Amino acid sequence: MLSRPMIGYAHVTKSFGSLKAVDDLSLDIAEGEFVAIVGGSGSGKTTLLRLANRLIEADGGTITIEGEDAQSVDPVALRRRIGYVFQSGGLFPHLSVADNIGITPKLLGEPAADIAARVDELLGLVQLDRNAHRSRLPEALSGGQRQRVGVARALAARPRIVLMDEPFGALDPLTRDALGEDYRSLHRKLGLTTVMITHDMTEAILLADRIAVMHSGQLLAQGTPAALSKSSDAYVLELLRTPRRQVERLNALLPQSGAA
Ligand SMILES: Nc1ncnc2c1ncn2[C@@H]1O[C@H](COP(=O)(O)OP(=O)(O)OP(=O)(O)O)[C@@H](O)[C@H]1O
Image 1: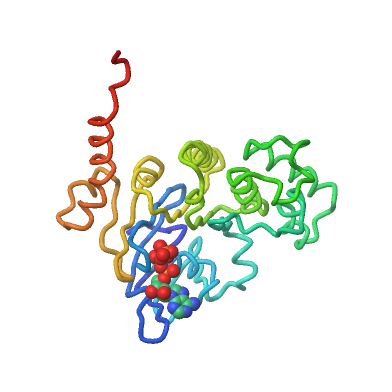
Image 2 (image 1 turned 135 degrees about the horizontal axis):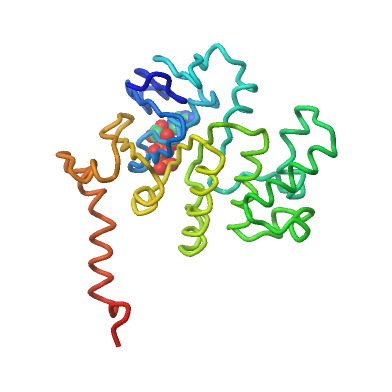
């Protein structure tokens, strides 16, 4: 038990009709941690993430954000404290890159000159060329560039927590790898606390400090990748073994690097 988790779920439950999407789930996430949420389709990952910023309201249990009961914080104020990156970027198609990134500071009433400076700073942070990208519309960006803008927008109000729902899932493997690494550096540099849903175990192992495995709305296991690889649960073991098995198959099919 952490003394004051950045995000604390205690016996949280959420049902849709008779379906328990999140079932008596408890999980603490410490300041500065990078936690990956993995699990099969429909296991409750997105629901769990959305409960944290009250895009969905829990039926039972308690969620604390930076030590405060989320229920006692205005949902709009809460969402400004928590950046959210959507799978497809979630950008407004009719707004330029700069306007997408600056939308929250604008809603907060910040002066235009401050917003412009912040947008430039954020474009630099996510490694997009300012002059080339500032006035483009999302449709004129590649998938990877869109996700970089999505990350910049999530960081615009200087949140300490970032939630990411399969942020790199729709990208080609090279772009995905580069974006994952770049985001991990940002996470460290800005001292963020990150929770990321991913279907890719390799990505979870490479990027996260800790992995939480969900199954049927419940937390089946959680721990460092090394600790989980010694789990006694067959499903968890299977998940953790998948990347290594793929490497073994690849090694059998491809010449080893350095070989003639
Ligand atoms: N608004 C909703 N109304 C009804 N059922 C819902 C709603 N949102 C989610 N569910 C159901 O709750 C369960 C958990 O959904 P959730 O989206 O959290 O799963 P997930 O693990 O994120 O899945 P995926 O990996 O496919 O995105 C699913 O059975 C889903 O159909």
